[in-house]
Image (cartoon, rainbow, N blue to C red; front, top):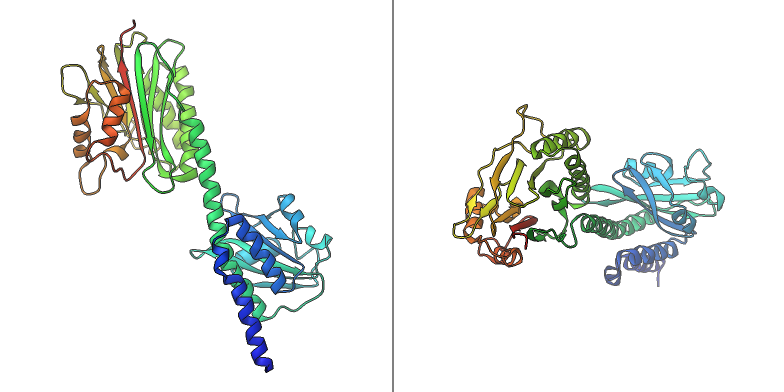
Length: 404
């Protein structure tokens, strides 16, 4: 067998080692570990490490390593553009260092363990840098073009795993946050029955829709529903801040419009660029009166025994955070007779492509009855035209039940 044939066989072996289909069946974290083992073996390197980009801090975070495990344990972070890994990310191309010094690297571990040569390549996903993969040698070494190509191929595999890992981490964090903010069960409040639903309308499963119920020191009952634009962790975080802020403003003002005015100021200052709709209602201690104010939110639907449901006429005050109107926000007040139901919802329940939202609201009103809230929730979520949302759905129903 000739030298060229042997070299071609070796290249093929190295190629197959990082494109092996079995890698795709591994969990994201296991895939990164296995990939580093193979890369270190194939390149005869002493260390191999993956740093993934934290997009919020613009820092590369040590995520997986072989021969550099201490880097992960110490939670090493490298600023984008700084040091060896930072420069690889910034230039978006391969980089080698031979006989480097402290002036060339940011992470002192690379010098502490005696590395002499480094090869690094960016990890890309959808054309964006999401991390860096690098290998190191304890002996001075010149890395070949074949070494670079192999490491770039491994970085492609790491990019897929890194994306999956980051998505799972973000999803898990957002779900935990959302579950901590949405009531696991509604409070038992004298004079009312309540039921609620939250249904994600997309694969990621997390958004900015929320509902809230709380009793105020005055005996009034606060009822809230809202929708922060977008999906994922960023929207869930904003939703949590807005929810907490509204609870605070509800304690200092017994006027829903004033509470939303304060909340609007907070959103414009601290959540710039975030569009939020909300409806805040207060129900009197005897549960016979409702005062509410809306901020760009769909109007509530109201039904009393013996009458068809009606869409409540409320002033069209703007959403929170857009700062386009200097007109004071307004309240709407109406009576809530015994057996009457108040239905609050987000636009995902009634918006459908190709039709006006008013048609969806009318369709929702047509199925509402002054029934027990849990039964009514089930009826609404299974109604034709309302059962296939394309966006997140939050639904909250409050029914006046006279004190007995």
